[in-house]
Image (tube, rainbow, N blue to C red):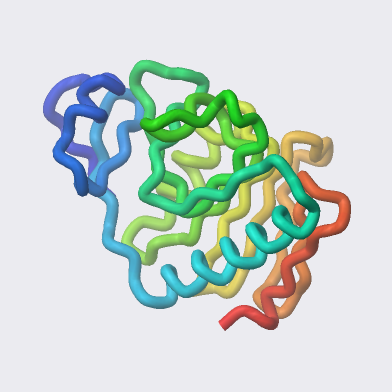
Length: 181
């Protein structure tokens, strides 16, 4: 994923791009996003199904969205990301353009073309904006790295695709990755 190094852009520029553009705006620069492969899409569908089924069974207020879904972090004028999965529990953050403010839970499935984007660039943006929980699902290493705002150790929790991974924003949801194809 390479930045288009032309000129500084704002969220107005982002929302003026043609529909179907697969880009993110980070710190004023557009980043082209790679098209997801089949494994990536399969993981996203499985995770969204599990999370959405859980929320509906609990009659919860949170909503689940898949990318492309625009998220304006902290109402910044120069950053709009498109997480693979966003869980938003405050309905006032959702409008026709996407989510205005930090989602409660974000899951990114790592793209083999640029893993640093999810592990470094987006990690910093999500945690600094107030995302309560951020999962990085890496199909290549079959690892899940979990960052939470309430973690005082400073280190993420790391799981494998053979583990049940607890969702920190819920007391009774764990996702069994061994059952995900």
